[in-house]
Image (cartoon, rainbow, N blue to C red; front, side, top):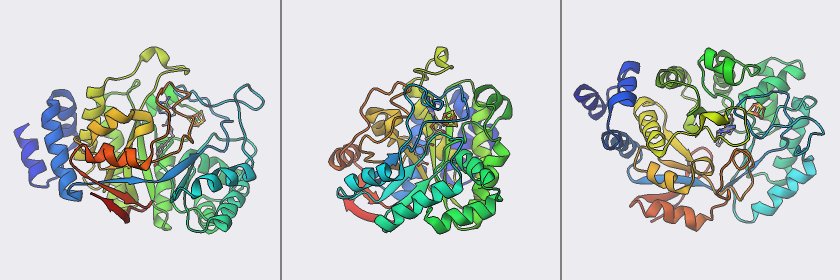
Length: 357
Ligand code: V47
Ligand code: SF4
């Protein structure tokens, strides 16, 4: 532990073995000190948040991920498909509140290709030219681009021209192929996920990265996952943020596993911050973690909270999250200020918009 501590305080990268040791042996308080040392070195007392909504155009999906509580088949009870106009209306309702970003993620619909979604992006940009569009996981992109008979590079370039500004981090789950086969075997493999993000970075589309944890993966699998991200980030520097996503257990095929406790959540945030030295930001997605854990995470390396949301997502409520997915800007600011840190509104590329002391 002494060696790891020395490395962290002198800005030396820790190894995969070090990280596994931290998961297995380190006390939580010790992890908090190391992680917050790095967080403060990168951002001082700033904690970022943004004003955004999430749009889930459809929950109809050709895949059957075991952890997913949200997907439905065509005409199945509980399925939805929003038209372009319905989506524009949702954005229009929230734009007055000053949102700067729409985050669009949904199921992989069998009949929607790149041009269907390209038209949506164009309509959004035509109506709301200033809004940043962060849209489509690598899994959705893979399907819609293949359906349109294009290469990934051609497809991403087209989407960029239609208005795509950045790519969210979903669909990464856990990169270990054995685990992937057990929990989401129909989905693109880890190589493909990384390839899509790499090409995006090369053509100037930044992206985020996630990790779904707390199901059947081991600590070693988590580190292997983060290591693949760290290697790609060394190459492209195209990732903005890493977002650990905690597995939620209601209404899906993995329910009997249960959920990990708050100690695991905080430990995981801290080790992500320590291991991913080349990622500028670590984000707590409060809708999934809950408001209290999110607030605590700000002492375990997290520097970013997503977002005001405006009750616009169903992925987590359908998986058992009880808190309503809505947080006013004031509530967000107070949540940050109560930890004696500074609330900073950011845009989607982490440019500071407003500092609230
Ligand atoms: O890929 C699905 C996860 C992801 C469950 O990039 C579940 O800023 C836990 O990626 N328990 C989609 N997780 C959401 C996502 C995301 C969210 C917020 C911000 C960003 C960003 C990206 O949701 C999926 C999957 O990993 N998920 N079901 C579940 N039961
Ligand atoms: Fe479909 Fe995504 Fe759910 Fe998997 S996690 S079944 S790809 S909606």
